[in-house]
Length: 416
Ligand code: PMT
Image (cartoon, rainbow, N blue to C red; front, side, top):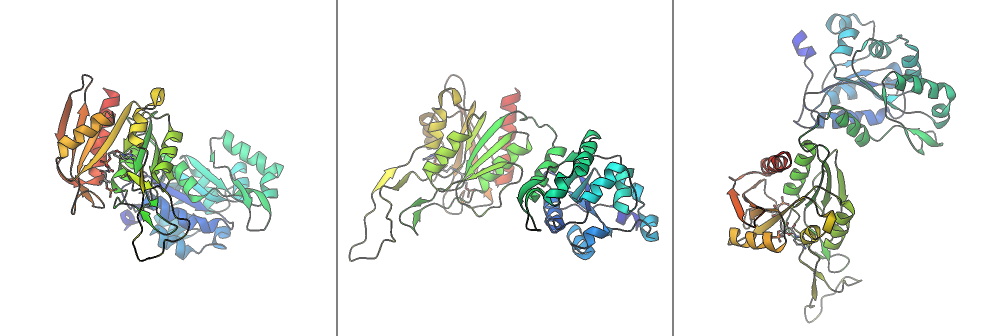
C-alpha cells in the first residue's frame, strides 16, 4: 500500500521521463492554468504530485487536480493520514524539482521569510531539491517593493524565478504580473533537466511536411506528406542536444515541445524561413516541397465554365539546393531526402550530386509507402570527400526509429 502511494505515476516516454515534479498550486486566478500544466508535464513523461493550498482551492478543486495528476492531492499539514503515509519531509524530498505555479505574493512572502504555517510552505522550507516558481499577481502587487525584495531574496538563495509577463490581467488592469504561459513553464522545466547531448552547442534546421501552393482563395496544389518523418527528426535532434528549428508546411501534427517551430504554407515562404534560420550546423530537408506553383493566383474562386481552366505553372525555388549554395552560411552537414517511386538508388544518387548535399535519404514512396505512413523504408547515401557515394539500406521501421538512427549517424559525424 505504502509502495503504491510512494510510486509517482509516469505517462509517455519523453523529455521529462523519470523526473518527479512536486507542483505547489497557490491561490490566484492563474491556478486554472496549472490544470493544463499538470497535463502537459505528464505528456512529457514527468510524474506529477500536487500540493494545493487553501488559497489554490478557491480557484481549482482537489478533485480536478487529483484527476489530472492521477494521484492523491496533498493539502493538509495536520492530516494524520497524510502524516502517517507521506510526511511533509518525504513529500519534499521525493521530488526532483519543486515547482510553485502560480506563486502568489503571499506564498513568495512566506518563502522569503521562512514561514511554515501550512503544508506548502512547510514543504518549501523542508526541501533540499531545486525550487522553481512562476509568480502571478496584480501588477501593483508585483511592483511593490516588498514583493520585489522577496523575489530578490529568493533568487539570491538559488530559487529559479520564471518572471511574469505583461498583459491584461483578470482584474482588468494591465502590466507585468501574468504567470508565464504553460508552454514556457514546460520549456523551463525541460531545460532544467536537460543533459548535454552529443549535439549540444550545434544548431539544426529541419524542413517537414508538404507545401500548399494556392490556385485561388480556396484551392491549392499540395501533396500527402504528413510531416511525421520531418517532425520526428527535429524532435530527435533536439533530444540529442541540438538547438533545433523546424520549418514546417501545413500538418495536423501537434507542435513538438521545446524547439522553435516556424509554420509556412508555400515553398517560397519555406525558403525565406530557412534562410532566416541560418546559420546552422546541420540541415535536414525532409519536406515534400511543391516543385511548381501557379503563375497567376486567381483573386476570386475560379468558376466552372464551358471549358476547364488551364493553369500555367512556374518553378518553385529549391530550398535544399539554396542551402548548399549558401556560401559561408552553408550548414556543415546538409542532408536531403529523395522520394522515389522507381530506380531508387539511381535517382537518389543523381539528386545527391545535383543538389550538392552531403548525405541523402533515399525514400521508397508510392502506394502505401512513405507519405503519411507510420513506417518508412530508406537507404542512406553518404558522399565522401573524393566524390564517392556509399549506401546503406535500413530495414522498414517506424519513422521515429529512422529519425533516431539518422540522428545517431549525425552525432557520429560531429564527434568523430
Ligand atoms: O511527411 P511524411 O508523411 O512523414 O512523409 C515523409 C516523406 C516521404 C515526405 C519524406 O520522408 C521525404 O521523402 N521527403 C522528401 C520528399 C520530396 O519532395 O522529395 P524530392 O525527391 O521531390 O525532393 C528532393 C529533396 O529536395 C528533398 O530533400 C526536398 O525537401 C528538397 N526540395 C525539393 C523541391 C524543392 N522545391 N525544394 C526542396 O528543398
